[in-house]
Image 1 (cartoon, rainbow, N blue to C red):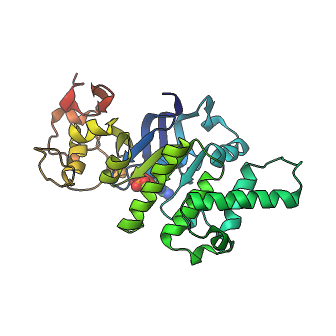
Image 2: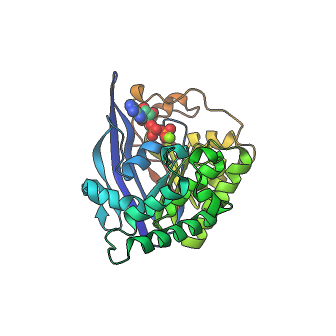
Image 3: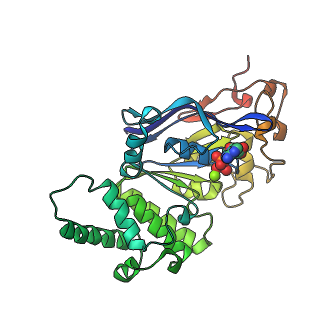
Length: 330
Ligand SMILES: Nc1ncnc2c1ncn2[C@@H]1O[C@H](COP(=O)(O)OP(=O)(O)O)[C@@H](O)[C@H]1O
Ligand SMILES: [Mg+2]
């Protein structure tokens, strides 16, 4: 399969009272056309910052210190702000946990979706008369609203975001993301704020989009169970680094990194046989990471070697882990 998005050695730092912290610390991965990739890890592991940086939206005072983000043949980190704006939406779209980061409360939902179409899709199409163009755009918006499962689109077109339920707002945000038929959707915890039933509906919608349109989807979530149900492949992040990655089956059947084992062990539904049900003590503190493996202070398998940083090594086909338990010792 063709690679559509490639992130190379991305490093994003934030200044803090304790010095610079590396929110994203040397992340490398690829996304294939139409693939569903999951990025999982606890809160604070750098998932959102990775997605935002791909989109050219690293929030200040964060700084990109190193790396490349290739969309097809273009390194986005070298693109002009104008080019990036065109990339966003047209080729890569992002959806968020809170739809109100995308929706504007004072405009009608249908008009917001139409605006997004207009900005990207019909840019420069001067030959269609304005009156006709508006009608065409509205038709397209109504089709999109139906596609994302908003009932009675004609009526809902005129509604304001606050008249929508949380699930319907989420669908409207997804309609905006789809308005220009992007090749990649970056979804950052898209269902975390929703109740279980609505969460399942939104995941079905993303599934349908992936199957019918062939859109590649990066699903960022702290919910490993959700990722294993949806994704072809999973990256596990810890303290800004990828600590394990592989096909979903391999990661859940044979988790290698003690951190992944801990995450899986906390999930009775998919806990691999013989994995002890053992919560991971402590939390990530980026400002006080040890010199070696960042997980070592919380790891029940930590050994002397872990005071130097382990490399990401292949343990079976396409399955990689950053842990001295599987080699890499000097
Ligand atoms: N505005 C900010 N100022 C300082 N540090 C930040 C800021 N935003 C994020 N960070 C740092 O980046 C780390 C990763 O954040 P984030 O990517 O949002 O994590 P995740 O999405 O995995 O929960 C955080 O643990 C925090 O240390
Ligand atoms: Mg996040």
